[in-house]
Length: 112
Image (cartoon, rainbow, N blue to C red; front, side):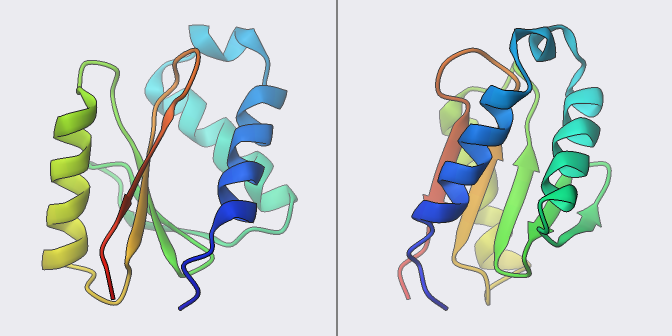
């Protein structure tokens, strides 16, 4: 798998930015539903892995995790590394996506 995911992460940032500041008033699940719908309209393949953990795949290569705001970035990274190593070893990249202002995408990668 090509780990050059610059285009994908850029697309995620553009999509989230395009949602405007009103998105900050959305719950985690409302934000997740809107973002997934927009990404699907843009041609991305989004598949559900685990609804209770808000885990999805993006284009069958990358894991997406919609984390609550109360989780700090270290917890997000630990959770994603655990999921990548334990359940989805063929995936090497995961994003933790939060509905917050500023940088809201946390990238985790496992070396091949």
